[in-house]
Amino acid sequence: MSRLGALVAREAALAWGRGGGPLVAVGFYVVVIMLLPLAIGPDPARLAGIAPGAAWATLALASLLSLERLFERDYEDGALDLLLLSPDPLELTCALKCLGQWLATGAPLALSAPFAAMALGAPSELAPLVLACALAGSLAFAFVGGIGAALSLGARRGGLLTAVIVLPLFTPPVILGGLALSAAEAGLPWVGWFAFLGAYAAAWFALGPLFMAAACRNALS
Amino acid sequence: MIPAPAFLANPERFMAFSRWAAPMFGALAAILAVAGLYLGFTAPEDYQQGQTIRIMFIHVPAAQIAMFAYVCLGVASFLALVFRHTLADAAAQACAPLGAAFTFLALVTGSLWGRPMWGTWWEWDARMTSVLVLFLLYLAYMALRASLDDEAKAGRAAAILALVGVINLPIIHYSVEWWNSLHQGSTILAEGGPAMPAVFLTPLLLMSLAYLSAFGSLWLVRIRGELWRRRAQALELKAARA
Image (cartoon, rainbow over all chains, first blue to last red; front, side):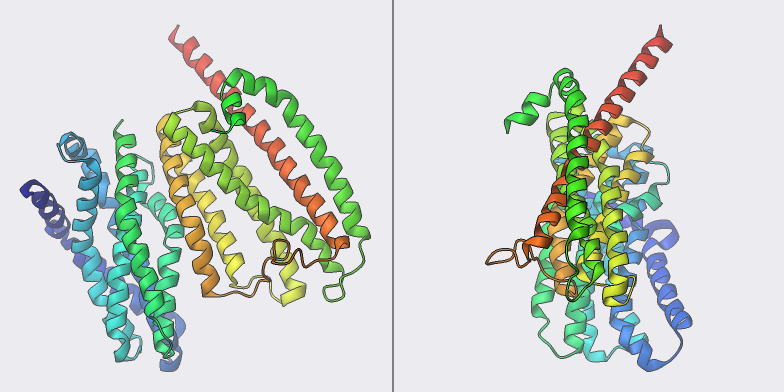
């Protein structure tokens, strides 16, 4: 267990260490949120209409940023070969790497999502749901994104390729979270949409590591 | 395993079979398309849609093949990944651009049909959006395949992506459906039989079969081309080593 704990700690430390990874991701998130009113216009009514959705869709984009570091650096410096040799199954290793990555960047991004939505003018009663959706959604983004990151190992233009692979797969969580938020805003029942989002995240939490491990084995073969 | 792929898994037998099958499917497609288009263009105008109903005969089959091709891509990828079969890998590689082409055709004809009927070129409607996502999935498959230098590795990575896409497709389909739907529902497979008069249904079914045989023919031709390309590459390597 300590070995696995050490792996999560290593991932989180790598993400937090030098360059302040999570802060940079949050910074990116804030900057994009700031650009939206600049592009759309400062009219509060108009901004409030798009606020929850904009905060939510931007989260999907911000989640892409850290994906490139997830496997690529370990692949280049040989750490991934060593992880493959470890007695733990590679699937578990990949899941823990993703989890560490999510703790280091997904969770801070999710924590800043309600503030982003409120800054754009979303009602403050919506904040808890934005946070809940963002937590579940960023988990799904991390695990689906991890597959894309593992698949594009060793590719030219890795980062851009990961985005092209992963963004179409992000459509269901983006839709489900958006539906939950707009339903809650309109005073309609939103629990069903949120449950679907949670189910999506849980499904890829379980399935993602299998595909990631297969992709890593393929890249290292 | 169903017998046909097992029989064709032998590249020698596949080449012998496809040599005749590809042109025959092509000819069949041409005959069916001529018949379908003739019936389609001589059919009466629709009481609501007027002349534009004829777009249906090229639009609906394209959308059907767009989805069917992804299923083919998924099956071929699965066989390539599990059995490490080169022919299945070549089939998957040959399938993706074809599927993308049919998807593009479905999007373009749908847009041309939407303009007179709904008054817009593009509507953020559920089916249009899910077909657009399907198109992006094809592009992602091709992009991944193209950007890895080692062909065997690229094939397996792309196969993994295709399988992830197959799992995701129904989820995308339904989530987009819940999100927004303006598109009409299923007419042919509706409960209580097809809700369409035979004057339109017959040419539509003929065109569907024509598209299906055209897809089969083109797919076989592309697989053959891919196998020849690989053989040429192997010979080139051999000559370079000698």
